Length: 75
Image 1 (cartoon, one colour):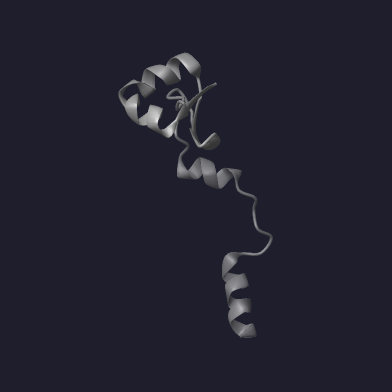
Image 2 (tube, one colour):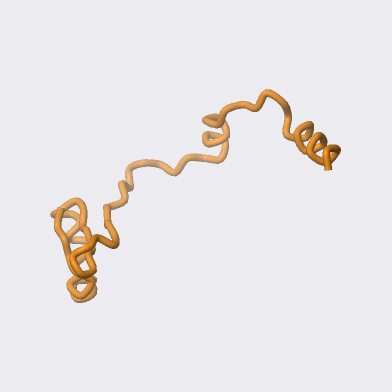
């Protein structure tokens, strides 16, 4: 993993993509402290559909309409 200062990152902005290909990850530092980490996006991974995300969610024991109604009655 290569470390760049903010100044070096600005100067090599046009070469960041190539640096990511070679290094895999880049850390940008300010006064020696890391402030950002750049990682390449894996283009082969598909963006999940809304349905796929819903299927991964845990099912609620009670429907949301019942929870909302109960909350309104309490107030």
